[in-house]
Image (cartoon, rainbow, N blue to C red; front, side, top):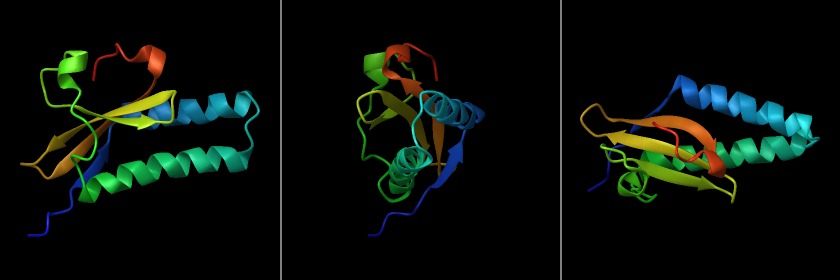
Length: 106
């Protein structure tokens, strides 16, 4: 049985954090090419969730979330939390966090 593809819903927090991250990378002198590589890596990870929404570990117990929450690890420094809403058939994508910020609420 083929699994239905879920829609990605980016929170405002995700969009804001991505813009901020790109700005930070520009300020530290990363090339436009390198920034594009990182953005493509993030987008590829998110797109893969449409077909494999449970591909990343449930970390709700680790971070004290009351709802099932999964984490995408982006390299060693960043992570994105997301939630699956099977009933409404979408994936809610939260902000990008630096590892030192992982005590944030989602």
